[in-house]
Amino acid sequence: MIGTALSANAQSVSLSQRFGVNGSLSIPGAAGGNDANSHVFTADGHMIVAGDGYDFGCNCYHVTMAKFDTVCGALDPGFGTAGIMSHIHEGRTSCGGIALQPDGKIVGCGTIAPGNDGSAQVAGVYRFNADGTVDSTFNGTGYVRQRFDPVSSGDFFQVFVNADSTITCAGASSSNSNGGVYAVGAMRFNYDGTLDTTFSADGIATSPPAGSITDATVMSFGTAAMDASGRLIVAGSNYYDQFLRMVRFMPNGDLDTTFGSGGIVTTGVGCYYGGGAGGYGLTVLPDGRILFSSQVPVAAFMMARFLEDGTLDTSFGTGGMSTVPVANGQAYDHAVLPDGGSLQFGRSDDGYGTCLRRDADGQVVATYGTNGFGTAYAGDSGPFFRGGALLPSGRVVGYGGYWPGLMLVAMLTTEPEVDALPVISQSGTDLVTTGTGDFQWFLDGSPISGATDTLYTPIANGDYTVVLTVSPDCIFTSPVYTLLNVGVEEFTVTGLYLITNPVNDVLRIVNDGATTPCAIVDAGGRTVMQEQLFTGANNVDLSSLRPGLYLLRTAVGAVRFVKE
Image 1: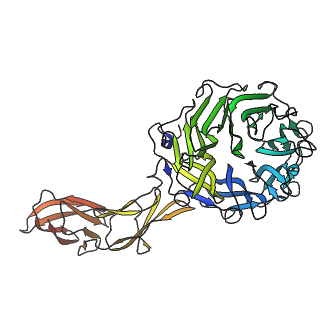
Image 2 (image 1 turned 120 degrees about the vertical axis):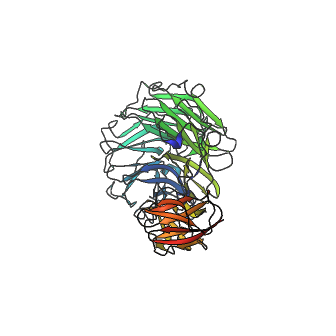
Image 3 (image 1 turned 60 degrees about the vertical axis):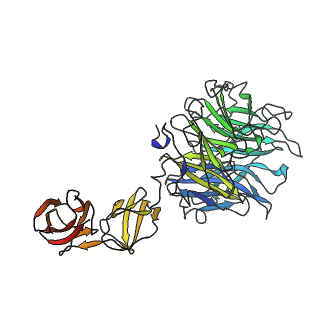
């Protein structure tokens, strides 16, 4: 059970108007391209998204991160510059993923190189302080470049922070103009950036080196996941046959011989190699089963589930796979829901960021959004989601990018009425506002004492606004609502106000004081009704009275009114 936001009933999905601007954030980062492919949640309840991009001006690659409040998308001014940080190590830095250390420092991984020469592109890991500045205590420079072997090029797909503060990076090596081999591997680093030699004797573990591109361990793109016992699965595909491969390492760096054949699983599951960082999703479920997502070579959202030993779980989807064609779409990473279902992120058929919801058995939840897809109509050109997350509130954050090189973060909700911004409208003689949270009404810029509800009965003309506070970082003010003719008549003693005069069948009275009795007297001096006026707004039913002139009398005053 994850709340009404993901219930079994039909659910429309829309952008949360509380988040960013019209439901999304556009994050510029460094010049050139920027898109997000990874995230972490911080101890202060914020979210950091990270990715990379190419800058035509310097012919270089950079890592970009942004930190923001998950309620309304307010960028954290204490992180980077106004909430955004971009950085380059040695002329080229890519970002495959990020992880958070207990002290709040951010570890990232990818490729680091002086330039774009393929033979110099080496797997790299780097660390930033909690405020987004480079952490120079990590290897003295803030980063480490490390080859899997003396010659091969390499890349890290994903990074993990272990309980003992060591850092595990998963990736692969590849050949280059100087030679080298294709292999899948992992490295483990100490907190200071040195290799942890208790892992595979020298800190570096690889699958059996490949002698050709047809070897089962060749990966050009990939991802990784770690289970609760510390076993590491590296998964991905290559340029040539686009079939999923998985390798599992034990916590000490040895291949896990209980997994597939000698620790290696070669599947017939097709997956698109062009996804790049964040292109694949991999999760080890609490029961040990393995969930993988990607796009298949023909455009479709694909998810497959495997048993703990690496064989396909035929109870999932159809024969272990769930494939949903999307002719012009793209499919990437996923998030697992508390009920065992999932959301897979990508680009919709009509070209916007979207997520596909499946249940725990791999079947599409057609009641979610439109045929299972919740789409964010945000981003000017070519928007997409590479990944996302489910928030404790039940709302969904999707992130990726859009042209011309901006990170895109959007929030989806199935409760638009709860997420509505304050907008004032009139209902009879009352003013009402939309939204959910803490309210304060204002008249001509001054707060109205005690006016803290969604409804307010005005007793004066002027410019009304409402301020809605959701959290200290998330405060919204409604557009001005100008009231020109309240029709209020005050009693001879202040504190009682007659709303509208003449009246129809309901007499509206606002009582600012204690409960008081009242009498309604007709033109002949006869008492025709007696009522109690309670503190606040009162409605007196006049439907039994004939049209005419009447007097409303209380102990503190009297006022004439006309019933139409």
